[in-house]
Amino acid sequence: MDPFWTYAKGMLRYKHLVVLALVMAVVSAGGLGAGLIAIKPVLEAMLGEGRTLPELARDLDAGPAGGIIPDGLIDVLPAGRFTAVVWIVVGLGLLTAIGGLANFLHQYLALTVVYRTQTNLRRQAFHRVVRLPLKDVVTTGPSNSIARIVMDTSALGAGFNALLSKGVAQVSKGIAAFLAALILDWRLTLIACAIAPLLYTVIRRVGKKIRRASRGALEFQEDLYHAATEAIQGLRVVKVHTSERYEAGRFHKLNKQAMRQLMHVRTARALASPLVDLLVILSLGALVLVATKAIIDKHLEFEAFMTVLIALGAAGASLKPLTGIIADIQTSAGAADRLAEMMSRPTETGHGATLPKLPRHAKTIEFDSVTFTYPNKTEPALRDVSLDVTHGETVAVVGPNGSGKTTLLALVPRLFDPDTGVVRIDGQDITDVAVRSLRRQIGVVTQETVLFSGSIRANIAYGAQDTSDESIRAAAIKARADGFIQAMPGGYAASVGEQGLTLSGGQRQRIAIARAILRDPAILILDEATSMIDADSEHQIAEAMGEFAAGRTCLIVAHRLSTVLAADRILVMDEGRLVDQGTHTELLARCPTYQLIARNQLVPGGEPAASEHTE
Image (cartoon, rainbow, N blue to C red; front, side, top):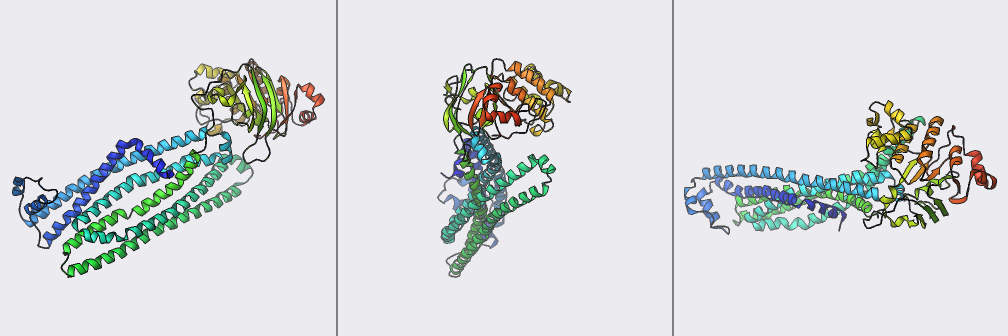
């Protein structure tokens, strides 16, 4: 099934509201049809050939739906042609009021269904993205996923609105007017329908073109969103490198490409309405010629022709907006295609309810012949790495930039899964257990600290929202963060701002360390966790982390000599391979790679190390 219609079926979740909205649309359209049929007796009365209300009632009662008007009621109806017109006009006014109320209720109910469905779809899309393997998100870029969650679902919502709100209203009115025309004169009405197949062909072909162009426009808008997000988030770097003109030029180029795709959509949409108008005018001209000949030959009454013409005009006026409505649906169909592509990607394994939970780590972490290659890369980041880490051991990982240190540690919480080989915790393959039970016993602090908009308290308690204020403060004290937090206006309730930009780098890292401490992890992963902290703070945190690490397995990527010396074992990585392991003294005596690292990269605790990018 077409993705758009697959997602549109989601509106049936609110089937009672959908049915009620359709009923209101029919009631509104019924008023229009009745009003069109009532035009004929009004014209007859104006032309001096009209009938009285009793005569009209008897004619109606004698028809196919007759036998429903009591004779006594017919006899008491006021006579007179003018009176008949007055009553018909009053009736039309009442029908208009009822139709207006029904139209309001239809729009109200339809938009309720549309907005609820759009909200559900956005929730499903976000839920899907956060369940995707990290390597998929890294490959396509976060902006790709964000654009589909926000932009594509909004475009789909516009299509749902065109379908259920605008489309149903216009189609029901068009059908009611068409049925009125059939009742008034079926022969003229069928003649007018001869153009329908041609109209269908034109609208269908234009719709396909709009769909293709709309998808292209959304893809360029996604690139535009990515460029804007990247530049604004990195605005500090942009300014200090005086790259405002470069970023403005890059944005302008992408903006023009997006505009060109929108121009293709514009051409198709602008072409649809004139083509339909031309075909309708041609068919109307043919109909007038046929009717004129019939009137001259006394085979057709003028008032009958006029009422049919008015009814067909009303039907055409109601159905004409369908070209724009179909264009809206085709535009959102391009968004549906992109959203379906993302939603069809397999989520990371390990979220099944039937998977066993991993008991708290108490024995070993084992890397068995692990190899991993990042998407779109030709060279592996890890090459046949085998390693055993004993519970409670502190292991430092060192190596040149790009040697695979960060990647190796990222395999433990299953941020990535190896291409070949197995990672085991206490003898259990971590891909065979519930991923939440694995990650809940791991605390991670990285060099690039991630904080979320909200309070300091919420950021420390992230992932453990039900914890007490006392536990949060205790974790902050251990991370040497309580002092600066208490000094801030609002203390733990103070807002950190988007991405934590209202805090210094060292303050952000100490909050991240407090967050890890609060989890009470069995496994602690520190990836350059103290790189942004001054020497005095680093010494205090090292003491706190030393106390906290007791009885836990610690995996540390470090450039600080003090961190390396405090480790039970040092792993030396180079070009994705584990080239050696041992103590500082042992490695200095036998490992050339470590000798080079110790001489050029490992620095005393008081000096800042060169920044290391994610590997």
